[in-house]
Length: 127
Image (cartoon, rainbow, N blue to C red; front, side):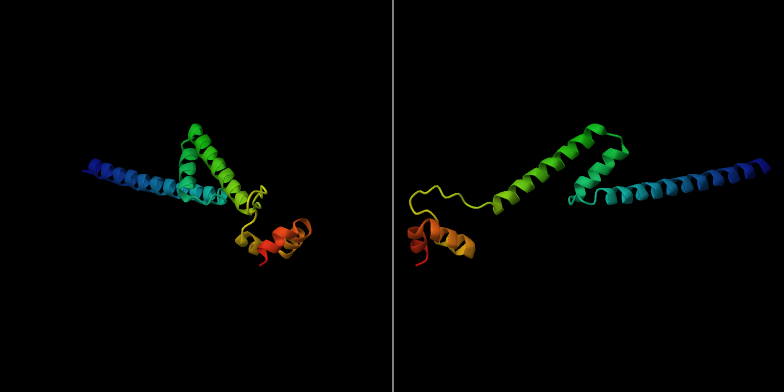
């Protein structure tokens, strides 16, 4: 009876230690996730951050490289789209030139330049 009491106490102690170890591992995991989220906070895609954190925790370097390549490609695409929006329309000098909407969107300095360089086009659009 005494030995079974010792075995029961030992089993309870082992179970308590297992629970403590599991909780500690969960806390470490959550702490590492928080650190990683802070490190990657410039990345707006949470799924990408989660995938990156998982790949780093598993030391899966090919997956890390793939994720970083996708992120870089997305940033380049985003920058190109922004550049496309901000660049002025090219006037090839064909029939009609600028549209009325483009003329209306021009700043006073741009309209003044158009007046100096192409008064006929300015007059056409300024009606």
